[in-house]
Image (cartoon, rainbow, N blue to C red; front, side, top):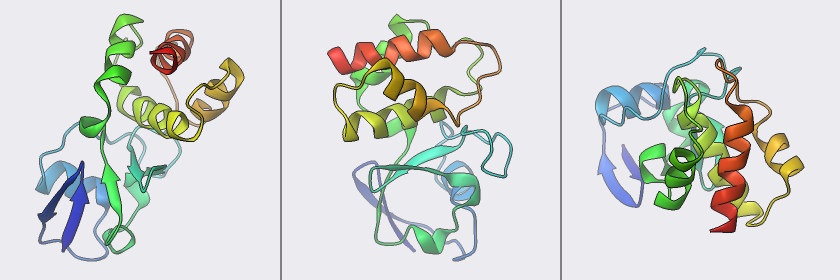
Length: 144
């Protein structure tokens, strides 16, 4: 199966029914996409599929053929740097999914309001309460 990930094309030997999350982590070594709940309820495993934030834990491989995938490893440095500057990743559980959701938002709305940032991140669980810093990081990245 041919995949387009982070601007590159690669071949993987995976069944059409395999979970995208498993292929990314186990077959391609892209460990930035994390396993959280496994049922698309936490946001931890999100990746960009043609610019939209989707859960890799419930996306089968057949659904990604011919589409552009971006994992947290392929996101713009400015966004990652804003998260570091705002200390937005305390425990790291949600970081990859939050970064991906933020990237999707910034593609749709390059200068979002705080309310738009909060809405875009709403489905992403944060166990340590870093939401205020995460929101500040997204707004910082938008201003850069």
